[in-house]
Length: 195
Image (tube, rainbow, N blue to C red):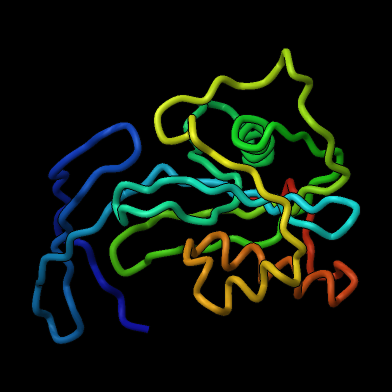
């Protein structure tokens, strides 16, 4: 494989979630071209399965697509020093009012590598229980209207394949969980393997 040497790196914009940068990259043949992309803090997502084989999905409004989407409980890796599985547990509690006793790593994906370095680590959470009422996170903004739905995993697969679920992490998580279940969970990795 050809080495693509980065000749310069210029930050154009920065906020708490991502920055937009321009890299001058030497292409095969020696031409140097500019490539813009987003440097993202990263995220985690949770496929929470209950004892009946149902997956916890939330409905959340997303301004960029101006739609309410089916999604996994998910969020940013934005707490210093927090492990990835702890970030996943935090997001599950905050967005779905759930805790899990068993955690496994399901998949690690780059959802949009043509324009971002974002990496999402997807965890499978089982042995689910509700967060006690007095310990529940107070949701604000788009999260204030989150709706939790328990969907049979096979139905969720159909929703993903029919285009009803379009969030990339949710599609991958649902299909990955169904495939892992079909293989008697042999494809799962320890939650601590997430990097």
